[in-house]
Length: 448
Image (tube, rainbow, N blue to C red):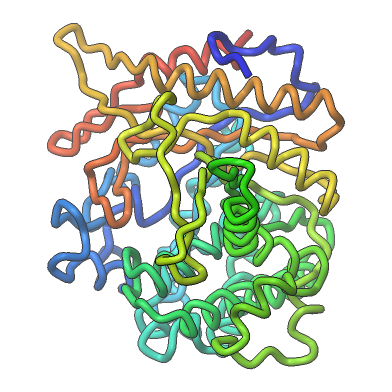
């Protein structure tokens, strides 16, 4: 798939939205301001050795103070939609019970500011910042956290539901479960398969319970979830490599898609996980499989795998494709994968609507002496992936929005501030925002 230019703007139907995305802990800062409670990411980031550069999200991009400036920046870049996350501990400092009015006031001002600038708000209710009180009571390994999440979701909807139409309950439950509970690179920093599967199930259960509660509160709201997806290709046509790729797909993709759309876990992965599964009640999968109004996909790269008998399930041995460009995250630029996942999910699961909730690349950006930030590789990345979206639309995929990750450089979780994904460069010492060349090109594309 060629990626040397943006597609024609006419390749996207009227009403299609172009925008960008962020998350609360990565940009807001102000972790002790106006009644916000601590999250498990606050503790994890302050634990020595957990973050690559020893940094935290305490300050981040100071978006909590600079939100007006940031909304003006979005408007100047012609963004039509903005996906943000609500910080659970800013709204409910203990996870449930006592409401913090100042927290909801902030998100109300943010939403009103977006609407005043003609930008459609996409709200995500959970982007990994679990209140510390709930974390210490079992976190996502506890069924009680699922019900607490549903209560929190309704509280936010009651305040913002008259202005926010598009809601996602969770961002990347796979990443929350596996990277945090099996790989240990994210909060809570565990390396336990049973804990991982318990967290994954209770995240999905929390999504289902929140869907039910929010649907009862506002029948007309557009409700969904955001999954990270990744196509897996085998190193060659050998049967063992093909089987390895299918197993990896089962863990990364089908383990979350199947319960959401089919009310079942994939049988091949379930058989491999049997000894480590948590208790699954008879009604759980029906609760998880609530009808979705939309499905958001976060796509960055593919997995190119080979069979490696030394890697125990569910690990997969991934092989670098040296001929391709790789970001500073070491992720291959492969737009074909976005096209494949869009068409496959449309074909196999038939969601009512799809949107690209995150798509972007981290590059070694710097502000040059003339004040410009030249990032041609990111520009090519966006061009290629927008062309993949256009191709999927041609084939009937009900895609209605594309959101770049990220609006601005920010705290990249376990990698701290070592990775720059933003359309806008942030000088963390001065908090100066500088739109990169890719941002200007994206703005011109939208305007065209």
